[in-house]
Length: 536
Image (tube, rainbow, N blue to C red):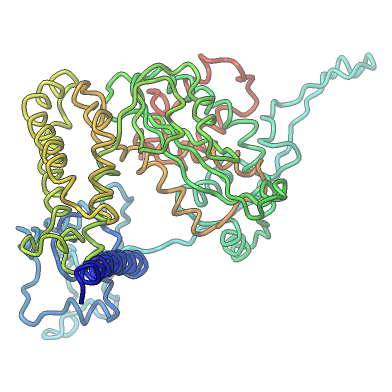
């Protein structure tokens, strides 16, 4: 064999080795991707550290009683029971559990025929007192009642003698909606059931029928649209004015299916629309707790730009590029960034993430190490929640800033050692690309570390969407946005949503409030009058 032939074989061998290595890398990537999909379908969704620490991260297919039963396990006592990973809180006493609920005393009398002594026949017994036996909770089924409203009419006899009418009628408050039987209490219950407890109209329809009222889902939908248009949109407008004036805001968005909106877009069938959420920062003491939903047919950042016109503060959000259209300061969410490392952690059954393939000795992996570093920063942040903004900022700079700088320096050091096509490398790149925005919270004590305020506010909508699936029309979606805004803002301010809806509808009925900011401000969930009447 000549030297040229040997060289040719060496080149071919090298090419084959490189091709095999490329195929192996692609295979490993495919296996990791398949594992991620499997975890997404069948694994636990929790991102809590105690769940990530365990190897058993999949949903059990067996009965919970069989899984959790343990012979000899002591009953919980008043001091709390220590179990794996945490200590259970002591159970509330009966008096605390039933506190605030009206009590009715029921005494069981001794029959008159038995009020004689068994040992001395004919001797009557003397009552000593009563003995407490137990407390029971009875359920009284709800009921409906129909009220026919009549208006008294009075006439002056002198006017009648002069052939004049002289008639006075009692003042009657106008109906909530024209030609409708709906009342503030009925509307508040129907709307809070759907928008606060995710009970769709078709399920409520069956419940009302069982009570004897043939109320259709169409009736309820019409009420939602009419009340949203006539009452809730002015309230939301007042809330928006206060929200835009805030210095720190949160933003998030999620999908919603709107049938008649999709029908307009003939090029793409079943086109999804979007529900946007804007919320005030929970760390800003100067801003009331406000949550506003807005329905939009698309996800363009132009929607956020239009809604937030006049806002010049700091916007906290995920890395969705649409928000880049806004000429404001941006702060990124650490929870979203952490989620990228959680994806990497759950991608490999060895718990260390796919970077273990490159470094077999590191059984935990870089993804797990990143999660622990983030957890150390978050643990400090949690202790600062009750501090005023200025003190919080000083504490962050003193305690958290060194850890944040160390975290990003560590990411830079491992960046080149990770397989670029795998999730851990993607997570590292995500974090480093958002470094400036992720560090922004250190400069202002009113900026939260995460966008959890928006995610928590939008979660009831996503849960409700699983039940009612879609909106029929854009008007219905807009009404839903207004009602969700009212419900979630009332909850954020510690109110009972049903009480608040009933109160404001009663107060607003028959009044000219459009454009009257002073009057609308009196009905805001944070106003003292509302707080006194609608506290949860």
